[in-house]
Image 1 (tube, rainbow, N blue to C red):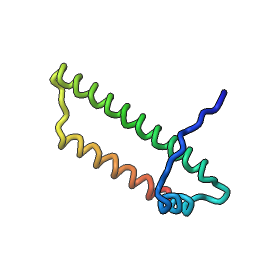
Image 2 (spheres, one colour):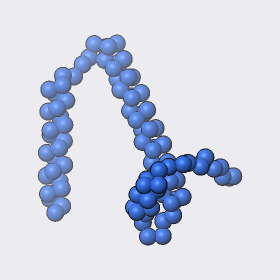
Image 3 (tube, helix red, strand yellow):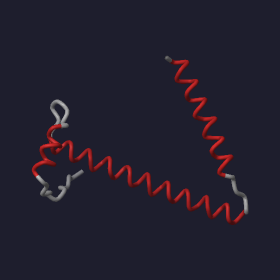
Length: 92
């Protein structure tokens, strides 16, 4: 597969210095920028998918008139959190 280039980017010298300051051993600034772009693309794709699922869920709830109260959702989340804490404690 052929590779493509990302347009060059002019930044404030302090931003470049900060980026260079967080590079891992052997990591290049180009590799850091590429990974940052990959991470941002992944995050935005995940966000778009999340919003699409939420809109679909909303539409289904409206269609069926089946809703879950905020109190029930929070209770379910509290139970999941408690279970995760117990599991983490058991591993420690």
